Image (cartoon, rainbow, N blue to C red; front, top):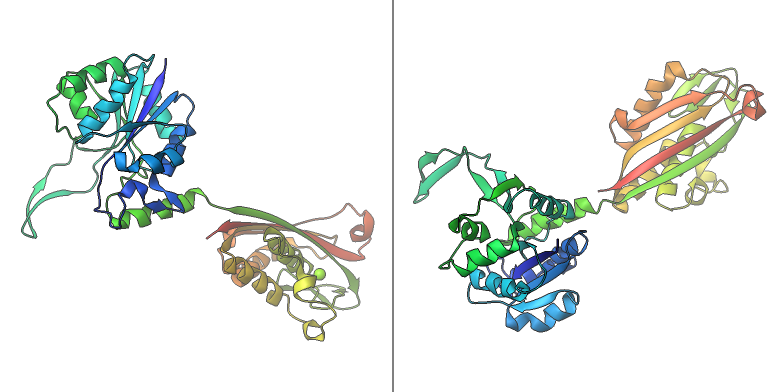
Length: 378
Ligand code: MG
């Protein structure tokens, strides 16, 4: 089995605006066609890649796609596809996928579904059922409704056994909307395969904005950080833990309010940002932070994350102590931390453990805390 992909990109369509045909315009930092080519190049099972271009674009195409075989386009889409099919004639190609260059969000997963479909069918095409109500319109008025059952929105890549689609194109009179129409005219049954909602065809300027949003979702940045803190007990009658005042037979010693849990969490967020630690942002040597409420530190870390394009996905704080008992206060602590950070409570966990009476926490000399925070790009 040798599978070729033909990417049709010879059109001069300027409805998308700009000076260049849409397939050469920039999308998320590179030409539209670069995205399309990358998807096919990343798909196992594509043995040969043909790029059909307008002759005027030969130089930029050669620079963009050194591994693709360039084919000059014809006067119509049919003629362009035909030129590419003729290049494949006489090679060992058994299957061919034909794709619009202006669908840059095609994924290797969809391309693979189409290759797989050819194992069982002579032809297959991706499509999505129409779910919106359909109307006919006339002069800005609704002129009637249209039954949508059995209607599909067609996409590419459309996939064919090679000899059959070559023969079908050679016998078609021309002006087909797509290769499925050509195949059906030759009596080839075409199987519908689930398409991909994001596999949009760039036509208008607004399509570029939507495509940019999809690309930025796909390239979501995820950062993980950890924090650790310890504060010693000192005489007193309460401790501050994760923003909650908890009665106790001792207090925690520290320059600020010594909220060991909130400090560990704040450091976890700084850690995820690779932005140092609390001590760097709020030096203990600076008297203005003496006795400061720790929510100032946590709020600063979250604001810094937002300024760098991140939000908190979740946080998990573990307090390590024999006493006080944390369980009765855990929900209030989660609520306090969530409120400071401006996130839902179910994104924030506070739990506790003892150290089995071992070590400084076991001897009740102080409390330790560890925290993990996940940040995701906005
Ligand atoms: Mg501390």
